[in-house]
Length: 261
Image (cartoon, helix red, strand yellow):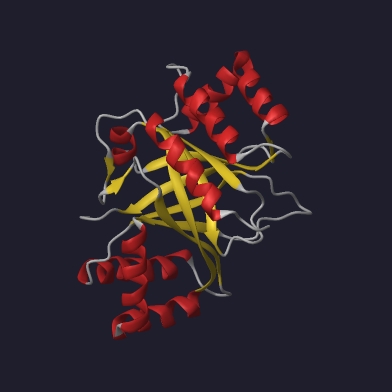
């Protein structure tokens, strides 16, 4: 699937004013009012490699990033309630996300590709896992910045969507704004983001993904209860008039490193 990057940028900039937070930066200096970069690493461990083997490499990467002043927020997600079945197994053991501004991501890659210690780490990485690396823009539609900055173990849902025929990016953005403006204060989530693949996303399962962040599984199920008690009408309107979506899956998320750790 081809992605219309210019249209996506128009969408995320229009959504930005509906962030509700007193503090406008995530740890690492990421501005929640602007699109930021998310490097995606979809990984499967090679035969004979343990998670402990792989994590030893990741710890060395954190030290390397600090040494070269290219630290990022490093996130790992593993399936909790997935769409996988016996006939449609999960393709990866885990997925990692490296969050930063776009320029910092590029500077980190230049260091990774040109420094001797970066290339040594890259060679170790290749012997431990097969990782497909991609890039995406992320825009926060609604967020509790303080909660997001302090909660390092949480639950996220993913819902991949593609616009219905005739629905423009401006119309979709307006719908997101209206939903954010009418947010139920009882909602237990601490963040809602739109995820837009921009490099390596030709086979993504949709044009964008909605990511909703909860502090724990209990909060996730409280959100499900609100939907069952009438919140489904908002989803039904979105699915009927604006986008075709695959439905939510859920993952456990761990913030493994933040700049300054």
